[in-house]
Amino acid sequence: MQDGLLGCLWYRRASMRQHEGLGVKSVIITFAGSTRRQSLNKMLAISAAVEAKRLGAEALFVDLAEYPLPLYNEDFEDLEGIPANALALGELIRHADGLFIASPEYNGAYSALLKNMLDWLSRIDRNILSRPTAIASASPGRRGGANGLDALRAVLEHMRAPVMVHQLSVPNADVALNGSNGVDANTTEAIRDVIGSLLRQSQLAKSSVTAA
Ligand SMILES: Cc1cc2nc3c(=O)[nH]c(=O)nc-3n(C[C@H](O)[C@H](O)[C@H](O)COP(=O)(O)O)c2cc1C
Image: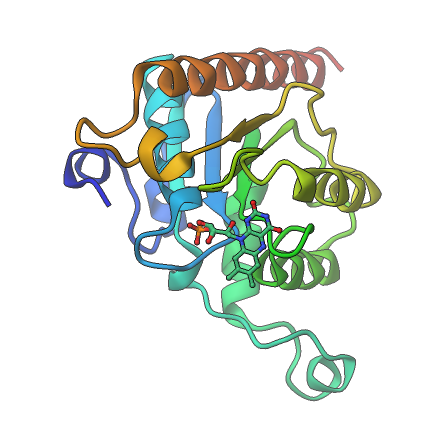
């Protein structure tokens, strides 16, 4: 993981305090469906937050390793309620104008970690994801984990997230995101493009809420 990227972001466990006083700028939350220390999808989500900041947004990378969750089970919820970490993630997402979600592909689908988080979020509020959302994947393989994104899109749309058509898969991501010079120029440009689309959608959604 690159210290330079991490240094310019809020990335440790985030608290709502960090959102106090935010103005008209769009707030973009990025996260990855992997908690691996050297996760390529975390690198992608961090780079997306960096580009969002460069384009004038407030950006927060949320590391799901900081929010461990039990595997969803209705008996558990009946006994214990919704875990504090799920509620904390829900609060962060409620304050976001747009989401950027990067997931690994595992055997043709997106990660179980991400599905579990989404299942818990759905227990807080069925509309919690109703904000512009960009999806992405990164893999050392030639397709960049793209196969997992169809299923991710379907689940997010089921949860009423307006998922942008513009999505991103980074092939050969061990080199593209983590080469000797960090993120390569083509990948940076592709990330900036998708984040630019997300910011436009977020601003449109914000202005339609203000006008209503
Ligand atoms: C169980 C397992 C299944 C995988 N299946 C796929 C796959 O179907 N397609 C693919 O491109 N990569 C696959 N990979 C490789 C992962 O995409 C790769 O390890 C990726 O870097 C993991 O994401 P991360 O770096 O964000 O942790 C698989 C890896 C594992 C451990």
